[in-house]
Amino acid sequence: MPFKPVHSYTRTRIADVVSDQIRALITSGALTPGQRLPAERDLAEQLNVSRPSLREALIRLESDGFIQAAARSGFVVSDVTAPLVSAPLAALLSQHPTASADVLELRHGLESLATGYAAERATPSDLARITDAFNALKTAAIEPKRTHIAEHDAAFHLAIADATHNLALAHVMHGLQELVRESMLTSHRLVDYDNDVEANLLAQHQAIFDAILARDPPRAREAAGAHLDYVSTLYRDRLLRLSKPEAPRHPAKNQNPETTP
Image (cartoon, rainbow, N blue to C red; front, side, top):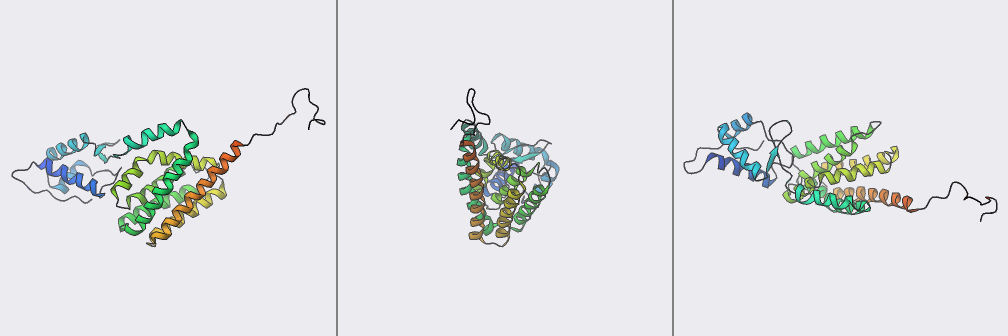
């Protein structure tokens, strides 16, 4: 963790120094949305401050919306854009199910940009996280029921977004996390987890992963764009099938099937 020991100040409150340091780490992208802060005791030791001073700083950061209480105690970095972007947009799209194509267009732009930046800027620790996320996705893709594949699909793309070290891009991607996850879940359900299609999707993720490891931004952007183009084709094919009226299975009443044109 990138925390620095806090030294005694005569005119500045320790809690202010601590909260300013954590806020700066969030602003710089060193702490990413959803990342858990160390346990209170460990964090106090790393910062070289008392636990009461640390608690005061954490309470202030929570009230300002930079961190939020975690499910099993402790704190995680907040997705600051989620209440402003994801919730209203999800509500809008729920009223217009065919707007899934709009989500795909948004993902195409954001993820192509993110993948290129990640190939250029990812640190060794970023690459380790992306590798872990890809391996989890790969494992989920070969499971018979593929129960958690959409979740791991989203986690892979979010790990890439974090590796851009672009605060705005990372927070927007995390803010849209639930929307993106639902989009991915819809994509996999659309093809009923077809083995051939899932193999194609995994191969496309492999191409994205390989391009990032190779530090090749143009190839990475091209791989991300090809992946989203393929998913868009799946959506279009599905909509075409839904728009075609089904042929009647039985002749209408009082009609002779042999003479009906």
